[in-house]
Amino acid sequence: MSGLAVKQGASHARLPGAGRALHASRVVVLNPALLSCAAALFLSLLGVVAIGTTEPGYAARHAMLLSLSLVTACVVAWVHPRTWCHLALPGMVLTLCLLIFVLIPWVPDALVRPRHGARRWINLGLIDMQPSELAKVAYIVALAAYLRYRKNHRSLRGLVIPLVLTLIPIGLILVEPDLGTSLLFLPTLFAMLIAAGARFKHLLIVVLLGVVAAACMAPLLKPHQRARIAALVAHVQGDTQFDHDIGFQGARARTLIGAGGFTGLGRDQASVLITHNHLPEEHNDMVFAVIGCRWGLLGATVTWLAFVVLAIGGVIAAARTKEAFSRLLAVGIVAMLVSQMLINTGMTIGLMPITGLTLPFVSYGGSSLIIAWIMMGLLMGVSMRRSPSLAKAPFEFGDDEDE
Image: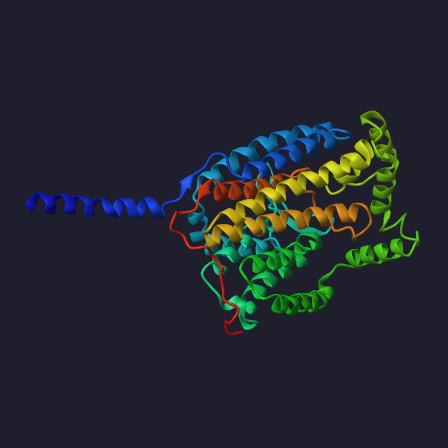
């Protein structure tokens, strides 16, 4: 009897360890985020080549920043997503403070460098940091942390806090002014609320409120931003009166994309056309026009498909995880990057007003590239950790819940 008791005791002594094993997440080397990272790497290398069409110096710096971005992404992926969840609140507060800091008028120009009338950049010496870029990551992490254990977003009243959390950075970024970046937050909010199980009829109301809020923020737009919207309307109507004024950048971009045809013109001829057409920001906001001119519709399509592959990897990673924060984080990252791609390419081909927004991974820019790869690191951190065996699938609600 005593021997049996000892064996039973030993069996019970092993149970806590076994329980921890069932609840622990495991690292998986082969995971869906590798698909997204492969697409992101392709886009980054495409950016180096495209930028080098007319700006070899910027291309070399883009390659150097890519190396730094990859190292940063690896460090971010190594940190458990739970740690980022704990840092959500201080990270968001710090980001909002930085967004306010760049707007303070008496800050020296040596520290906050105005460009074209916009105050968006903090001089860090080697690179200029854009708090609005950092806000994209901080916002996704903060919203995912807020929604992870809640179900009040299933009611209309419960959507107020997520909407306010979204409108605060939008308002600060609009004042910089940076219309392009501010447009990314509402689609990301919408996607994350869908992933969290919000009701579609309530989301429709949120969309309407967002449109009303955007209309209320219209007075915050600078005169040149309103003029760009007017130029887009004129373009849609076939009016070319703005093509040599505020609509010059968009008109040049469309001309170069059209010149590329189906397969493109090649490096030398594309370089000559881009240079003689005086395309502004060809290494940055307008890099998609360079791709269209050099590689034609085929190159543009491959670029779009690379983002599709990136999104597929991220969606699969989100679907595979049972941890609520990780799922929302993955969905938010995919929504933010895809929204940015759609806005950038849309403005380049004349479907949206020019907003000064970069093409993720492809455009030259230290903050833009590093932040995009930080998102990839977060996505990899989610995907490489298999959910605990006994974890409950998140955001499963009954249809009979109170509204």
